[in-house]
Image (cartoon, rainbow, N blue to C red; front, side, top):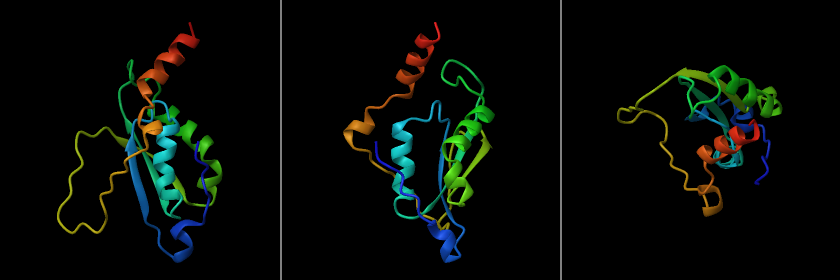
Length: 130
């Protein structure tokens, strides 16, 4: 797994902008970490937005539980101000206008990361509790 390089981020440049990642994070896994690292390793700040979804088989934790897990995992990065973790309402689309002042970036993971499955991880977790 790729190590997080904790840099001061854009905060030291007087820029409070963040790279926004929106997801359910059910659960947060190595593929998600790889994705977040794409911006952290560039020295950019990251905002992790947790969609407030109904609990079901695919969403085994509440958004508040996910927020607590992420805040524990990224405690150091949160303390220095390079990561923020927030809950947002569930969404069905992301809409932009022209010249909105930020980039839309798609990160294509390497094959070893692309094969990670949140569904498979949830099944393994479920089987461990039986």
